[in-house]
Length: 104
Image (cartoon, rainbow, N blue to C red; front, top):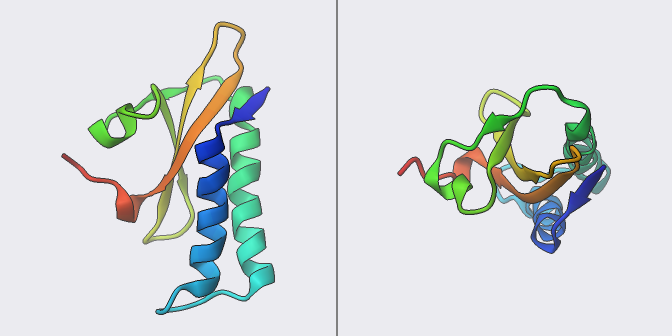
């Protein structure tokens, strides 16, 4: 099963808000909802994956041990940061854009 932290739920909401209010290129609400739905569907499938990659960036390691890189387009990757338990359950902790990830 896949579970979401309160922060991950807020991240999805913030992504939707950001997409429709983006000054450079705002998306129509329906298109923005589809975009966020695609991210959510990707998260919902994490428990079926056989490979889980360790978080590499210190920024990501603060939130979870594993990361899935969801490449949306040439410019944007969404890092889905999560933890696994011994039963294979996934706990999504954060969803962070490549534009906000510090490579420190």
